[in-house]
Amino acid sequence: MTGTEPITPYIDTARPHPARVYDWFLGGKDNYPVDEELGRRIAAIDDGAPRGARANRAFMRRATRVLAEDGIRQFLDIGTGIPTEPNLHQIAQSVAPDARVVYADNDPIVLAHAGALLRGTPEGVTEYIQADAREPRSILERAAGILDLDRPVALSLIALLHFVADEDGPQEMVATLMEALAPGSCLVLSMMTGDFEPENVRKGIAAYAAGGVTLVARSRDEVGAFFEGLELLEPGVVPVAEWRPDEPPDGDRPISLYGAVARKPVS
Image 1 (tube, rainbow, N blue to C red):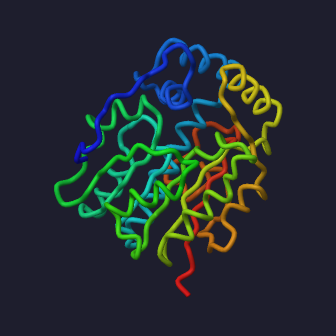
Image 2 (cartoon, helix red, strand yellow):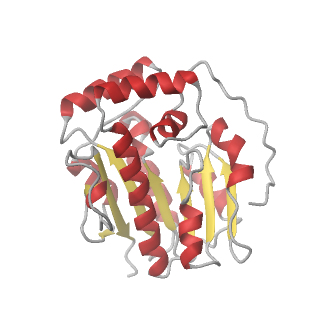
């Protein structure tokens, strides 16, 4: 982390924030009473929500490790969220100390913590850029100052796109990002679904909406559409806990999040 961007965020503690609610689900301390209140309300509706958050982070760690072990040395993580350990750069650089990682987020709470917590290896690069996921070309332009976009990049969109409504063009966003990346680049994505527990998910969406937060659940086919033109890695689009698990499942209820990893064809 070079700390080239001034850290002068305004943090609104009167309204819940998705990154801080997620932090509360994970047992973190970087949240406020309003976030805890919403988190408790959602957990009362669906007591599997914190378990889903843990499973989602575990999916990110497994996918990052798989790609680093497969030779990917550049990572672009959009919608970073509040840093938690181990974070993406720690996983990637534990496999390849020279890995270059760029985090992008526009959340002020993330910006407040990024300078202190996103520190990587001396051999590699760990950088944070303040940017809006809905402006992919701006992200690419700024990331190109740190990453070599002519070489493969792992694009990580973890639990991000379910906060982007269809009318805001989430598929176009992903297509713009992947089109700019070199052949051999990979897309890592997780997204909420109502396929397994539709009533709980519907109530959770309503609770977020009451807090002023947009949330969209998508079916397996709708999630799969984000990977159009890419080569899915096994086992394809599956609940996050079922993507190459390395430990027994946390409980027997389904996780209402799909995850998948896909590669941009080389030829």
